Image 1 (tube, rainbow, N blue to C red):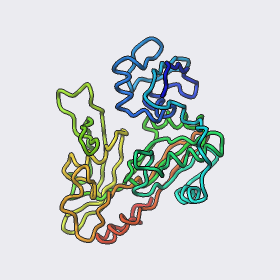
Image 2 (tube, one colour; image 1 turned 135 degrees about the vertical axis):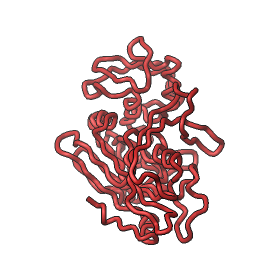
Image 3 (cartoon, rainbow, N blue to C red; image 1 turned 90 degrees about the vertical axis):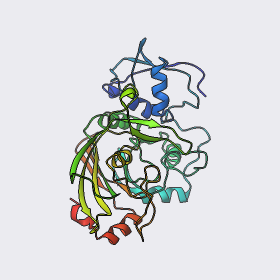
Length: 327
């Protein structure tokens, strides 16, 4: 547990970065809800002034980080007791890599594989990165996250300096993400934009996001998703849709598709697991299909991840052809 106030100077690489993105890079243990509480109560400050989670940083500014309720060791410093990857862990990590260069990895994360650990989760991506860090002397850093049951592309920076560059990209709209999903029913219209602010709703079986109400404006998070129908079943029971988030909120795509009446198939938090189609595996049908962004060094990264087995099986059942839209 951190027991004293820390002060960090904003580097040139971090100029223009949002405060919440800065915390994700330096203290990934700090959730958005926890950071929101720290800023709302004035515990996190820029210089001597109060700050919001979406405030932009400037080179040379001082960030005041209060005592935190856990080990606040920076993300890129391996803990002393962290061991290198075992042969099986290395094999798992290598099996996920679909693109690599001197600065980044891009992985195809399997369905059901957690990005971060928990009480009952001992094997997770964050742990694999810690093992790599023990070998490389600098821990690779996640540029963004995916839910446990969302498969597909996820980007990892090999060094902290690269992570800072990626952080600035992900904080803007320079990163284009395309998700494929199978949803219940057929969205109307066939192509549209969902601009619905979200707010966290806590429950005994885990947090969910829902549309905010008029009296919740101060706590809501703006959330915008564009979608296009790529195919639909003959009986209109399900549709194959392309989803493009213009913001990056927790459960955004899952909450937005539920909001328009077409929850993602297999989504047990948002009603997609009810009245399930015969022969289809009851798993979340959401896949991060493609990511495009300027490379931190030069050029452009454009990576597409193959569908997981359960979604391929569902595509076959309903006659959806993933080859139609590979480009």
